[in-house]
Image (cartoon, rainbow, N blue to C red; front, side):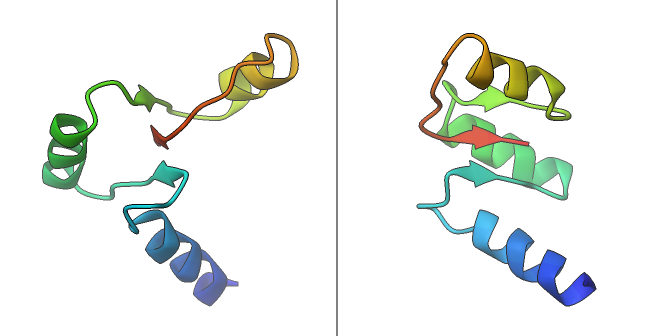
Length: 63
C-alpha cells in the first residue's frame, strides 16, 4: 500500500498531472509561483461539493 501511495505522489509531481501534491514548503511556493491561478485544496470535501453540486471543473490544482 505504501508503494502505491509513493507512485501516486510521484505521478502528481509530473507537470502534466491533473493535480500537484507538494510535500515541502519550498515545493509549494515554487508550484504556486508557476501556477498562480491554481486552486489550493486542503482536503476533498469542498472539492467534492464543487464538482458534484456546482459542476465546477479544474484544469490543475495543488493539494
